[in-house]
Image 1 (cartoon, rainbow, N blue to C red):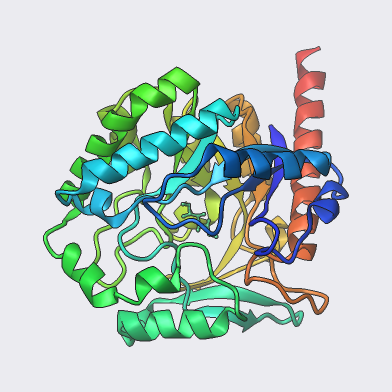
Image 2: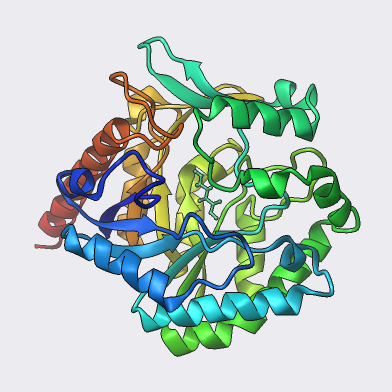
Length: 359
Ligand code: DNO
């Protein structure tokens, strides 16, 4: 595995490449052209410039998170082919720049959803949190307004104000789309892009839905082992794979993360490893990466990744906001750096034990 950090790019991220370079064991970044809109073609020149900037800091681009999918593709609208053509053009340009991993999601309207961006924990840190009761009491517009207002002036990934300004239209677009239609639209998209993924050896890594259930009545399909296997089997090619995000799949306590990792062997191209703490079945908050701070056994998760022979990038995921840092919620430097060091420590121990056993 390779330890990486998500970086939104100069001008968008409070964290610099120089800081990332100094986190022990982090050799790559997961990045994006944050200023592009879903549906746009990424120019080879812009990708090249991003790559040069990252490499000048002594790092490399380990993958892209995300190339977002236009709603016309997710809803199967008549103009979807134009947007798929654009997506294919972007993939070609990434491949030509020697980038071989793309994370994306297929969540309708909203990307990841939280009701609080700064819930205070007993140690004084603040974290992202989700309460189903709060969601049930909100309408989508209020939800967007509160996320926008609480983000400290940052555009949260997947919560682009330009797109979400048309929430009513977006909801109308999805009115006819149920889970079966969403699966069919995903299949159509994957079948069209896979030839170019094979040509450039690009691994597509779908991000699970977060939380792993329907929000505001919108369908969500990348939620559990059964659906993940269905999506892989419906377009059965190793380039059609998964971002194993423990914090997203783990929102549903019925998802057995270790079992899911084993069942996705060979198709996990990227991993987001983080912990969260359930308060009740309907309320969870994010935690430090350390097992004892949350509800997951982080050792068991890393061990499962080791046991399936995972070789792709891992990144620590949302961190707590600590030590007075001001950054995009979930994406400060300090707690993610602690997370990276901890996950690297677990990996080193597991790897050394594995070697001792095989002698
Ligand atoms: C949140 C992220 C998601 C993820 C996208 C992938 O912090 O994990 O926004 O990047 O869903 O497309």
